[in-house]
Length: 432
Image (cartoon, rainbow, N blue to C red):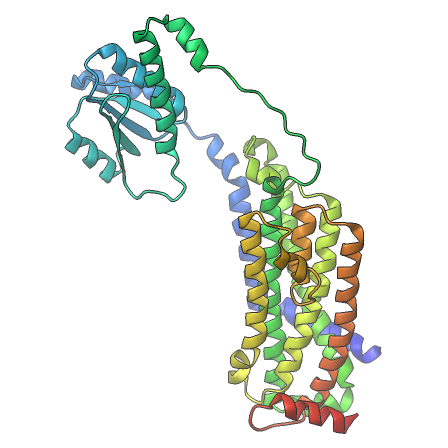
């Protein structure tokens, strides 16, 4: 136990003194600070020229245009297929209600001019209406999440219905009441709100992904470096291989956990200092509204999942004689972990949290730290399933740790070409 404590302390101090470790941690904390303080820093700035200034400028230039009051990017609107100015006015007012965060400019400029303004960035986009049933949408670099065209479809459909009803003799007020009817509904969620929980679940899964790959690789590299420099031969005479293996792995686990605490702890602190400036930004609110129960589950699955991979990375590192061979040796293990990560991410984005793949992965120790945690966060999982998954993980950590220690004891004393799995098994049997 004393040997383990000495090795653990030595390895942990080396991690904390490592300039790369400290630099990455400080960079992440600084980046989070900039993001969290951004609304406070920009909130006191004077607002740019509003709609009134644009109107004044157009009046001075004699342009036959109008602007809906509001701050934001400019949307150009040209109504070429409507002869009556009243209808053009209605379209302009409707667009102002459809895009409240934009400055909607009603203009009679040529289509070529509108396209140039959009291409140059002077305007966000332009709509050229040929009546209420047809239009052309001009935009520079169409975003995959662009929903403006769909919103305009619905707006013009209502304008067309209104115009048709009025032509049929229905009074404008009555037609407006028919089209503006509001459908109300209530949603009673009996389980988890997947959209609300998606953001912090993704953040935690991605953090676990990075920490396991980063520190697992570091464990393997450290072991291979000591072996290639022959320092391992000296260390193995003064300490038991099991103590060395567990000391290195648990030190890397502690370093990774401390780094996560520093990053997420600073994010939580900076958010609370600037909470009033974030207003009602749903994504930010959801991320920092993580239940304590889920945080406890995250800690359990993080530690157990990390230990499984760290033991395996350490065992693989002990079988390599050259540091240059580390990447190729750990590639199968890395691909296994990445495959599990992709299954979880695809299931999250597809909304199928409880699909057959996720259920199977919830009990496989190499994937359960991510899969079961995701199901707990975004679905309703019976307690006995959670306990079974944790029990399998604990048993796997003990078993893999025991086997990895045996591989480590044999591997650190064998040099030459890369060891095959059959050779490792035979060496373990002889040493037992």
